[in-house]
Amino acid sequence: MSDLLELALDAHGGLVNWRQVERITLVLSLRGRLLKVKQQPQGLRGALVQLSTKRPRTLISPFPHPGARGLFEDHSVKILADSGQVTGSLDRPRETFAGHERTTPWTELQFLYFLGYAFWNYFTAPFLLASNGISIAEVEPWEENGERWRVLRATFPDDLDTHCAIQRFYFDEKGLLQRHDYVTDVGRGIAAHYVFDHTTFDGFVFPTHRRVVPRGNDDVAALSAPTTFLIDVESVVVS
Image (cartoon, rainbow, N blue to C red; front, side):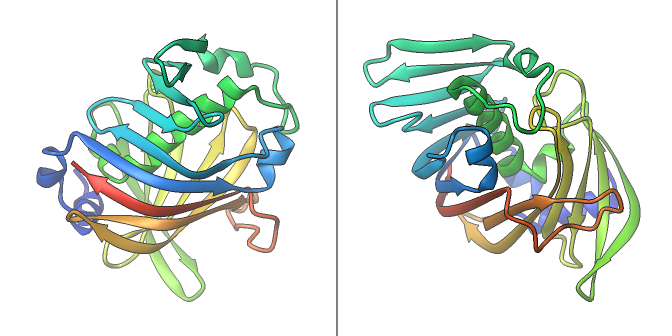
């Protein structure tokens, strides 16, 4: 394990402590310009999101409307009524994005897949980077707004649902995550994902505000561009 990853894990609560965690429960809202492009303008408002820390699994309530919830697990998604009845499902959803362009609309099940795997990746990082099968290397540091951030490049295995194979994570001198760069294979976007207002919940540190903006080929973020996504976290329970 690199010394930078060790610093980041310690700053966010510690890997030994994390290995005792089974579930993360969040209340959050999501909005942004891309939702209109993908014809999912409702976003999320005060949604309850439950994540397993042991395997990729995300439950979002309500989704896509009151009286229903969306489940991502085992490389598939399904929508369930409160009664438990499955009202929609999609196996191997990633294959359905083949041929998509940036402006191609998403179905509710495709949107659920995107949210399910993205939330699981976002809210388990940086601990996710210590998982078997993910290789990491520290690369050249990055300077932005008078700050110097250390950078981890992570290479993800093909069998993990994530944005893309190679991603970069930027950490400040304390080891706190500041930025996350990736290409959304399913959304055809080149993104810089900033995190703010780190807050401690049950001994673990989570950013409570996230802003995703376009990123140029020079890796400079288009901070003046319309926001792709905004995620506001109201509460986190770690259990």
